[in-house]
Length: 404
View (tube, rainbow, N blue to C red):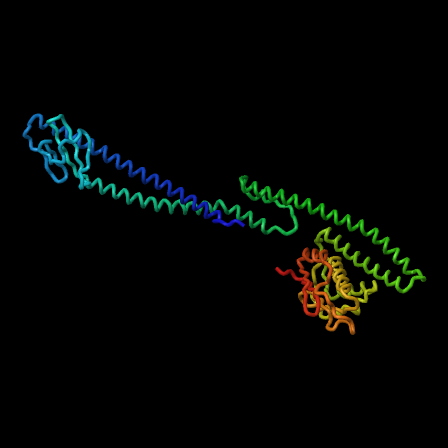
């Protein structure tokens, strides 16, 4: 499965990157604007001063020009060597003195050179650069934090929808999730889940109807075969070997009938009404039913313990589970006895110590047959049926308490 950052973190990261980009654009624009404004302001200021001093020189060539550390004016002939011959109207930064800027104004032979110290402006630029870095950091953090908050509000409906979908039962049910969400993308997703659940429900109904019809249709030929077997058993001319074969056919029909009953109950679904049952009593009744079919269940299945009383389950479901389970263990090995231990958690079936007196020990490590129909009934009830392999042979555990 592809892994990545959670959606909320990705949204917060995107907001943070947007904040970095906007803060960077704002800061760079501010610095460039201030730099250009500084040049324009300095040019306009020096040009204005130069006009004043050129007018004064025109009226009095010997007028005394200002000479201060922050601002000085020279006649071009009296200017320092590096300031002579400057192009008119352009502001130059003095080499090695970043704070001093000079410009020359006036006609040839009568120009004045103005030198101005803009250290306060440079300090302002430094302040703006620091402010720009602060805005960049704070803007990025604020954008990421805002993105985290907004992402949480955006993702919360998705998480709520995921929780509701996760809480749906295993069996298909009709849902109305779309009504709980706004008409946006989340609502559309909820509607798609509702439609999917409806399709699953229709498919499950078709499956149940098919299994119910199949189990009903299969009962007719089974009843015909069973009737024919009963008629054949009444024939006095049958040999002992033929009677053994008919007994095997009858046991197979009995087992097939139990499987069909389990299939039919599974197809109909778990009923709403439950019975209060005793597991030990239902086990004794199941053994009695199998005794009537000639399986010698009373001799080979040795009940011990009480088991849970007041068990909540449909009677037909529990009868079907026990009938099929007991038939399977009795058919595992002819003559093998089984210990049926009842406790508060359910029923355990394992070969009796020593098996049948003088009988062979079981060689298989499992029952050799499936219990799919019984397991399906148990799963619908919240129970669990497990087959385990041991040194003494296979064992079966029926947990009648929901593991959850």
